[in-house]
Image (cartoon, rainbow, N blue to C red):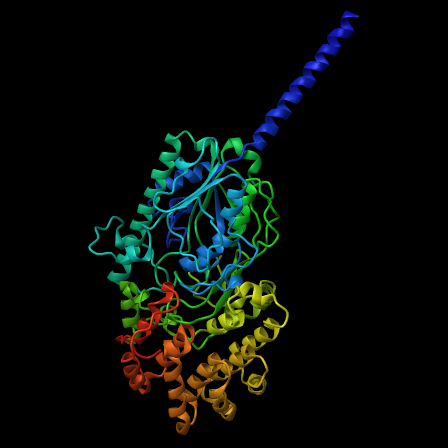
Length: 624
């Protein structure tokens, strides 16, 4: 009897211990982490924790020793506003229509910015301080979005999501003068596409200096977190909003412009939220991008991500399997129009240029304030650059393919390489399908997008049957960009399509082919100067004025003059017309002079109020 009771007691004790362990584990799983984002501006993975021995980044390096470095993190957009729009919405900015630098579109009805979902679940959410969204804010995503925003203002025992942004590494700080150099310009590694001059070396060295300043800001926040006794309760992200602020990095959707540092630290208390490859001081090769951050934060907070989010959670309760590709995009950059899409599988980067007749280095007022840009362009005009350096000032190829394993600077285009055709086709098809799946709005001109939306969000318009025949528009855009002569008859026929989006790309295809294209469709192009769509009229006018018959030039120039009037046509049409005029050379100088005499008209939104004025200002550069 005594022996039987002893066994019974032992079993009961074991069961009790197991039950207690279960309770502790369940309790830990029920506790929700604080989440802290430390963000910075305009810098790539030029940090010690990414193997850059020239960099001085002790604070993020120390965080990386406790956390995980992601080796393939993309910002989706290579400039702040569309990148941050993707972050806050959990939707590609190319899906919402917010891809254009400093633009504004309505938020999709029935959807929310992800901090709103966190707030509804009990989180205190603050942003200190930059927003810069290209999309209207529905409701109240933040408890506080200001310089006062701070986790310390939350309620007792309330979990927080807090964002602190450092502007120390912004592009504008690279060219700040006077500046006392810390990193030796003589020792900096220059990418193969930049010329080796004192100005370029100084800018790159100063870039590393300001990255150190951003690192110091992160260090101060981490000390503050530790002093508050919150380090063991807080998941920390450190990342930048896109690649470096140097020219051909910022604004360009290749790896150089999209690759960002991403370090994530998850304390032991929340190890159940770590991914399988999490090792303190380790690295992850998982492909992630900004569209994934919203579902990931929700997943860490125990909130199931809504199905309409376009990204995938890579951490937390609702983690998803790794994805094989991530994507990039470029739309209008400040005052200059462009359309580029990209995709990577982690090794190869595929870039698709839909406006290959526009050079890489279109004149952007802001970009040309950097000394590197000016001296680089000057050496181009003097014929003193090698082919890799000079490519930035030339028209773009329709397709680009780079192998990051052997070509970190992305200067050897493999799109014509016979042995890489399999990779090229795989990535080409992947990008094509992604554009269709996300209902990419970049294939409508900005003016046309707003016109078709009629005050609703472009996201909703693009999903309404019959409103946006993207399959046909995309097929015409791909045909237009390819430059191949056999496609001319098809493009001429498409100029008479019932959809203005198709007509726009058909005319653009003739313009891309210059004299041969315009000659093939000359009569049609002249008739399209009176097309119902102002976007079609503008591109037809550029084609006729530049490459058509002299007898039609004055009519085409008059169309461009009329459409460059903000008061009559709206800011998006005026920007398109002024972009076309920029390519007219000396012939358009009388137009420019007349336009400058017009009274200033404010844009509908202050975010893009300066762009028409910039396009009207003379500069010392030749026509593009």
